[in-house]
Length: 165
Image: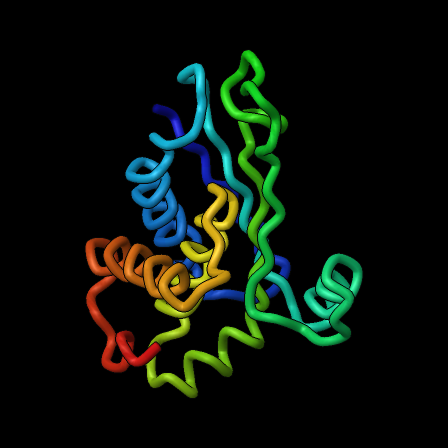
C-alpha cells in the first residue's frame, strides 16, 4: 500500500523532524489501516507544524476554545464507501493533523523528553483520531497511548520520561 505523508512546517524545526515523522506515521498507518474500507488505492496524510497564534485560531474556530492546544485532527473519512482513488479526500487523504510546536516544546520540557519524541507522539495521536479512534474513556486513552508508544519505540530510541504520561 502506498502511503504519502506530507509535512508542512509553518515554523522553524529541526531538519531531522520531517523524515522521522514520515517514518513514524507510515509505520502506524501500515499497522492500523486494515480496519478501514479501501480499494487498495493510495493513502495520504498531511501534518502541519504551526505556531501558537495559528493553533489558537484553529482551536477557537473548530472547538470554541480561545487558546492553543497541542494537536488537532481533521478527518476526511466518513462516507459509506471510499472513492475510486482509495480513501476519501484528494489523493486518498485520510485527513490533516495540526501540531502546535510551542505547546509541544513546553510539554516536552515538562515531561523531560525530546521535542522530536513529543511531536512524533502528537502526530501518532492525531493520526489515530483520523482513523476513528477516540479517548472518551480512560481505557481508550491508555490504548491510544500504548499504540503510539509501540510505534515510537520501533523508530525512535526511548527518551527518559516517555512513559510518564
